[in-house]
Each structure stands twice: as structure tokens, then as C-alpha cells.
Amino acid sequence: MLGQMQNWPLLVSKLLESGEVNHPNREVFSMLPEGGEFRYTFKDLALRARKCAQAMERLGIEKGDRVATLAWNTHRHVELWFAGSGMGGVTHTVNPRLFPEQLIYIMNHAEDKILFLDVTFVPLIEKLAPMLETIEHYVIMVGREHMPETSLPNVICYEEFVEAEDGNYEWPQLDENTACGLCYTSGTTGNPKGVLYSHRSNFLHTLTVLQKDVLSIGAHTVILPVVPMFHANAWGIPYAALAAGSKLVLNGPHHDPETLHMLLMREKVTMTAAVPTVWMQMLRHLKENDLNCGELKDVTIGGSAVPRSMIQTFQDDYGVRVNHAWGMTECSPLGSLGSENSAVAELSNEEKLDVQCKQGRPVLGVEMAIKDDDGNHLPWDGKSSGRLMVRGPWIVESYYRSGETALDDEGWFDTGDVSLMDEYGFMQITDRAKDVIKSGGEWISSIDLENEAVGHPGVAEAGVIGVYHPKWDERPLLCIVEEDGQTVTKEEMLAYLDGKIAKWWMPDDVVTVEELPHTATGKISKKDLRDQFKDYKLPGT
Ligand code: AMP
Image (cartoon, rainbow, N blue to C red; front, side):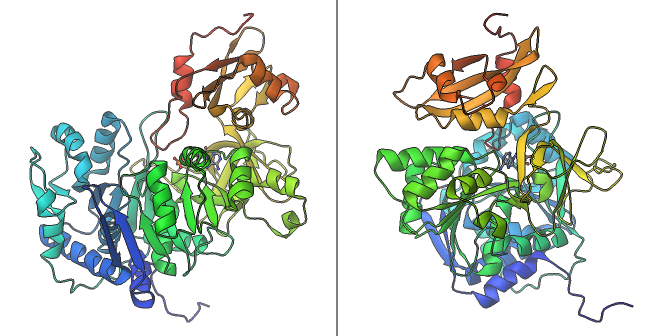
């Protein structure tokens, strides 16, 4: 027997409409790539999204067409995001930090029909345009007064494009399983892979993001999602903000701590989210200039492991609660996060901090399992580590145009992360499967070593890789970036680590580097670091 309730398709246009109808005067603030800033309301944003959808239809963009964006977090990007998906197209957020060859590969593989780009990216796209095989129109996201001279063909001015329409447009009632967004993984090995989200998956993901224990988002929240919209849907924050009625503060192309801090204070931000490298710079800036965080209450950090020292500093020195989240492009992206449950609430402060350093408990809608290399399930005992497997309605089933399932026989997706589950149901990542250091048949977690190393006050950033060792196969090499004006010797570093890690995890060498290589999504690129040190000889070998 079937239920007899209304069969209302779960569409992302409904999230926008909820914002428009229930919170029409809530503000959106945006820094602009062409300079200056802009402010309007949810009502204005929704109208502009409809105008943008109308304009695209008039231009010949059809349902299913891929609508690419190469843009920072701005009000225009948000309205375009909703327009592309809402009209039945597929909003393809392209990460401008990828290498030119990857950008060309991605846009050709996606068969993007139209590209909306910030004025900042015009010189880059002018170089790539001859290789972009399917793009018919280039829309530069500025007003006429800021349109650059350009060699790009079929160029459109965004403001004229949108403002030529009247907004008298109804969002189509699509099947909720219709494709809605496309995002490519950052592809540290091989070509990037496309993850094709549906309206249903993004809608359900939004409902989970809006739960009390998840990202602390509600009608009173003022959110600065520093995490870019081109990185895994900005962790779903723009959807959630519109749905909940939270004020959105968008930092445009600015990621420097000075601007972010100015925005925190001036716009009275209460919640923000980004990868650890952003917060490392911010904490340094706060300390050097004796600043506080204004009304900021919650910071969600994910994308890479959050060092204990970062959690402590935010909480103890600035009264800001750290929410440690884990996710990936393939998970829309949210998989787990670290808000305490009733069992953890009983623990001492030190023990709570231990739990916060883990990657959190699975959110409703995501199931997790740990399997060994033979596919056997491992217990959740805080000790057994293996491959982290996930499943749920917003987890990838197959990569875009791959033609094959990405799941195992039981329907689990292998995340490529090595993890364990503790007795409180909190997951802890010990490594990427390919980054784990295999020493004498045992595994050493590069993430744990890095987290301990950055606890040293003279260390700004740390990366650990396995280097060939004739007896043990691999041994850890610790690469550190020193804080400005500080020197940390190998002896000091090893003495600092002594007692904090198992003896046999102690790095065989410590080297100071000017900087560590990063991926397009802000993670330390272990692949590049391994390449840099591929001929490195450990002392005594
Ligand atoms: P991306 O698809 O670029 O978001 O990358 C996803 C990958 O980032 C995951 O598979 C993890 O390896 C890593 N990651 C994300 N969040 C965390 C975290 N909190 N701690 C450690 N690694 C993380």
C-alpha cells in the first residue's frame, strides 16, 4: 500500500523560494571581483535568479545543458547557481585553482555549453578558449562599465544579460532525480572525476545540514562561507542559508586574513567555514594584532585534519567552538561532524578535545563502515583501522560518464581514506590510503604526525611522507615550514614529539622547507611532496 501524501519533488528551486517567501528581507552581502561591494536581499536574489534563468533560455540553453561557472563566492555566483539548476540545467562549478590542462579536460569532458566567469579569470580563459571544444558563449560577470577588452568569442555582459529580462518566470517542476550540479574531484591521481548531483540529493543534503547539531545554521545565523562554491558546493552552505534565512556574507576573491577579519567584525558574522590553512593564517593575524573574533560563535573546519592546537586556540583564546567536519566531493560533501553526543558530554575537557580532533560522527543519511582489504567489516572498537566506506542518498553511485558503478557488492563507496571508529561512534581518519606510511609491515599515520608537529609554536605547517628505507621499506620524513622569524632544529622537533607519539613513529629526519605544495582544494599535495623528495636519502641509509 502506498502513502497518500503529496508527491512534491525535492528541487533546489524550492530552497530558493523558501528564502524568498519566508525571509524576503534577509541580507546577502558580497565583495566584488571588479572591486567594491554589494548588498541586497533574498527577494532581490530570487528575482535575479529567475531573470538569469529566463536569459539563459532565451539564449538557447536547454534542460540538461551544462552551465559552467568559474567564479568566486559572490551574489552573482549564488543567483547563477540557482538559475542554472532551477531551470533544469546542470550547474558545473569549475575550480579555478586547477592546472590549465585539468581545466581544459574538465570543461571538455563535461561538454559545458556556456561559461560564466569572473572578470579576474578573463586572461586565463582567453588562453584556454581555443582548446575548449563545446563552449558557445562566455558571460563575464560584471556590469558594462567593467567589461574588459577581450579576445574571447561570443562574449556577453552578465548584468546586461540578466537585466534585460523581467523575472516573470516559473521554476519548472522537474523530476527530483534530474541532474542539478556537477563538480570534479581535485584529481591527485589521474584525471579529475565528475560527481553529478541530483536535485533530490542536494535537497536532502540541505535538510541534514540544517539540523541543530550539524553546522549551527538557523534564521539568526550570519554566515561567512569562506569555503568556495567551486569546492564541493561550499559544503552546502548557500542552499542551507537560503532555506533557513541566514544572512550570507560572501568574500569574493579575498582570502587574506585582514579582509576576512574585517568581514567578521563589520558584518557581525556568527558562523564561518573553511579548510585549516585559512584558519592557520587567521589565528596568526589575530595574535599578532591582538584582535578578537567579534560575535563569531562557530567555525566549521574540514577538508584536511584539524590540528589539536587549532581547536584549543579557537576555543580557549577566542571562545569560538570548533566543529570538525569530514566530507568529500563524492559525498555532496558532508559525511560526518564532530558536535558532541550525550556520551561525549560526560567526558573531561581534555577527553572532549581528543574527540574533537577526530572527524566526527556520521550525520543522518550517511552510513559508514570500516573494511579491511579483503572486504571484511571491522569492529568499531577505536583500534581496528581500515578503508572507510560510506553509503547514503547523497553519496556518489557512479562517476559522470564513467559507465560503471563506483560501489562494491554491498553498495558501499570506498572513500580512499583509512579510518577507525571509536566506541562513541566517532570516526577518525588516520590517512589517505595512498599516503599511509608502511614501516616494517605496520602503518604510521602521516596525519597524526603532522597534527602533533604543528602543535610546536615555531611550526606554521607540517607535511609527512614515507621515504624509502632499506630495512623498513618506508620511514617518515617530516617537512616543516617555520613561523616567520623562528627557527626549529631537528633536535628540538624530535624532542618536542618525544612522548607525544609512539617511539617507532618518530620521523627519521626533519627538514625545513620554504613552503609545502598544495592541491587546488588547499590540502598538502603529498604526491608533489613525494616527488620533491623522491631521491632523498634518510640519515644512516
Ligand atoms: P575533497 O573531495 O576535495 O573535498 O577531498 C576529500 C578528502 O579530503 C577526503 O577523502 C579526505 O581524505 C580529506 N578530508 C576531508 N575532511 C577531512 C578531515 N576533517 N580530516 C582529514 N581529512 C579530511
